Image 1 (cartoon, rainbow, N blue to C red):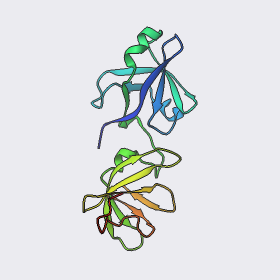
Image 2 (image 1 turned 90 degrees about the horizontal axis):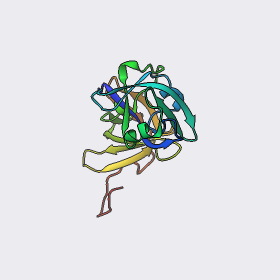
Image 3 (image 1 turned 120 degrees about the vertical axis):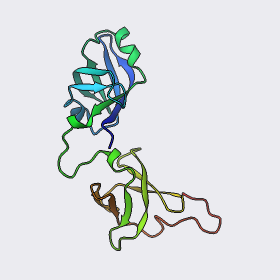
Length: 177
């Protein structure tokens, strides 16, 4: 398990008093506001004390202690920010997406193994799970209750209820999905 987890990327400055726009890679600005320290690397280097976090459209506006001007905020542009896993307190049944990568994908009805979770993206209203099949092909499914039936990261798998063709491998020269 990773000790430090990505929560977003600084994409712009906001105003002239050191506030920064953060593209959120976590649930919400409210979740991020629960952390007093953010880090500039996946190893926990360069801790930054948080002065304020607030929601702004689909992003967060972040102010770090000691950053009070646009000039002081500019060096953070493009930087990915991290939280310490130890500082996060998730409700029961909630998991970091990072903890789901590599899980075995099993059929909820018969236990058939379709592959492993390669990646989880969030392009729209729900997460999209990319599964790497044993044949080396990628299949995708939306992380909605109709398909995603159970998460069991402690045991190393998740359960799905696929529709016909969801995990079929390419046949007759068809291209993989």
